[in-house]
Image (cartoon, rainbow over all chains, first blue to last red; front, side):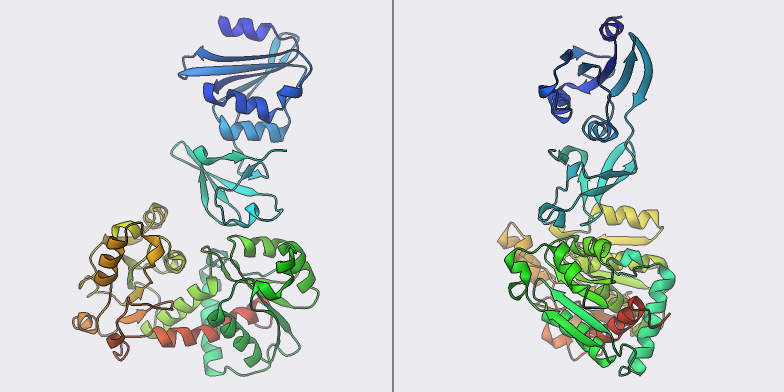
Amino acid sequence: MEKELKVAALRNGTVIDHIPAEKVFQVVSILRLKYYNQPLTIGNNYDSKRMTAKGIIKISDRYLANDEISKIALIAPNASINIIKEYQVVEKRALVLGDEINDVMHCANPVCITNHQQIPTKFFVIKEDNKVRLKCRYCEREVSQEDIKLKKK
Amino acid sequence: MNKSLVSIIDYNKDEILSILNSAQQFEANPNNDLLAGKVVATLFFEPSTRTRLSFETAVVRLGGKVIGFSDAATSSASKGESLNDTIHMVSCYADAIVMRHPLEGAARFASEISPVPIINAGDGANQHPSQTLLDLYSILKTQGTLENLNICMVGDLKYGRTVHSLVHAMSHFNPTFKFIAPEELKIPEEYRVFCKKNKINFSESVELNDNFNDADILYMTRVQKERFQDLMEYEHVKNVYTLHNDMLDNTKSNLKILHPLPRVNEINMDVDSNGKAYYFQQAQNGLYVRQAILSKVLNVID
């Protein structure tokens, strides 16, 4: 019930739900919400059946671009995205990582060429046993999900 | 189509075998004019005399010409030029580029932007495919086959890129591996998973001793001091992992000992005169394999 109320409060826009509590402000930063001048709600540390504590972000009149979605998928792969039009959820989008992640994160290997020269990064997504590993196209090292550092743009 | 060779996994089984086959022909006839009129650039952003001379000799013996530099200090990289710009500039002059770079992934990046083929002669601790191909050639030449061999790898199996690439390359030929390494330098989990996935039998041990009596190939690698946090442990390992001549008494008659070189003290000098020692011939095989690689990327052979 509580969730539906929150969603209903938004007329048009996007609701990002089930964000792990500790990742909420990273999502805020990815979407540059600090500079957003339309109505915006950031909630955190709610009880959740699915996870220990969750956060939720509701943004009026804003729909996410694909690169924003893939960034969120990297740090909060189990979050959900609901698109709201006239108070109704018109689309639910699961955050599915594609097969490749292009130029949204740094390689964790300090001697990878991409950390020394201006080269867009590229990672292959390897999904195994519910775990995601990312393999750098260049140095061929794998980055685990905990070590992901997103690029600032 | 750019035929760059960046990583050994760029070549499938047939391509590997075709390289080894032409290496055989170059060994029989190392001097000819296949690369007449071709210019090959050797760009060594970090020094590696052995590898550079081997590639340059390969070009010259095939009638080609060499340009390049042997140290980043004498190139415009020292003025801050990006790899992107250096590759674009050199590809105006050369038909192929052989490069060694201290940063991992440098060769892959170069192969994406270069209009001429790139041959990776080592990118940091990442890949060095011509070394792997010469290892394979040495195995083929001494055993007569690559199929169904017992291969025992000793030393630094954690960081040793030659070991990792050889595991990949041999996976086409139904090998049985034995990995012998100190606890700190055990083969990474990723390669255990790789072997299981490809149904390759392997066993692991921390003792060198006579663990290799059923081996066809004993692949030794250097145990580097800087890999150890505890120097006492290094001293211990260094002595335990030294191969002595008398340890070879009960080994198979076809056994050959390989080492990517340079060695420090993991193979005692008393092994050198044993007919099973093959590491110096192995280095010479590098020349023929590099002739084969150059001819393939430059399209002068099939």
